[in-house]
Image 1 (spheres, rainbow, N blue to C red):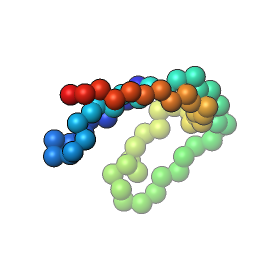
Image 2 (image 1 turned 60 degrees about the vertical axis):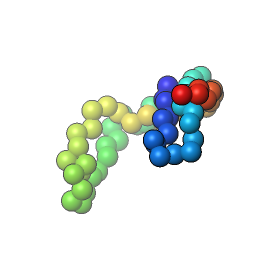
Image 3 (image 1 turned 120 degrees about the vertical axis):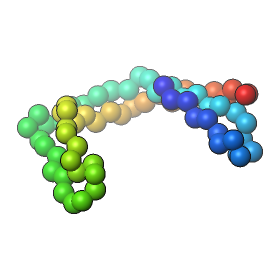
Length: 66
């Protein structure tokens, strides 16, 4: 679930709540590894789990007045 809050200076006054559900997960090959290069700080990140491809989401949402 994710909530989107508008900026204070925005003309949008609703908080939007989105729920992602009903998806399926396909695990990527277990021995596949990401290779990071360059000088961006995220290059030093540690990969904690195997990669997964998630698909088939049912998007359900609603706007709430503030």
